[in-house]
Length: 115
Length: 111
Image 1 (cartoon, rainbow over the protein chains, first blue to last red):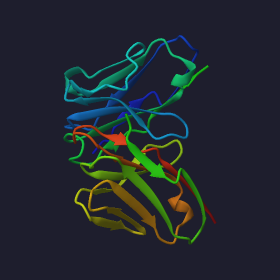
Image 2 (cartoon, each protein chain N blue to C red; image 1 turned 90 degrees about the horizontal axis):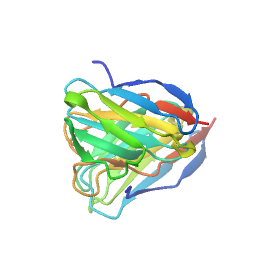
Image 3 (tube, helix red, strand yellow; image 1 turned 45 degrees about the vertical axis):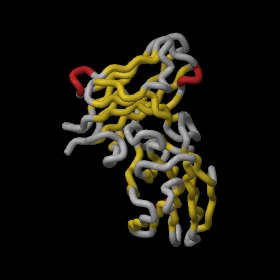
């Protein structure tokens, strides 16, 4: 069974530029999560989708971050314009059902460096 | 906002020593998950606890969830360098529909 796929693995941009990350969850997984993990900290939930609807985006900086999950499968996370403090690893995860009912499966992450 | 506190924040132990990591919530948890992360890699699922008083073991790692379902501990017996990494507890302390992580504990095992 293929795991959660993320791309790109690494991205270096200058501040005020834009960047997009892509995630392909495990086939059949209804719930998709995007987390931001700053070095030395635990992952912070940015947005959670159930199929193609948003369950929670309370910690997503909506003035610069946006995310979508078209057709309830793949998802894209965009940052525009990027700030220095956005440097982090962006983790995508998926689960079969809603959180609390089973394991989350994680991708390898996309490491963003903003100069 | 994240509502799971882990302690200690970091831990350095000699190989062969036992250690314990704690995860505390101010609210009742709808299931508690433990994950491990190595630098530059994704998170690996360790185990899930759902019932108050539940205890699970996998190899030399044992996790417990207290009766009130507000605190969990992860215990490693006879630590090895392969145990090194960041340990994260995860749960939803609110509705059971979302998933947040704790603050993380960085473990270093000195050979």
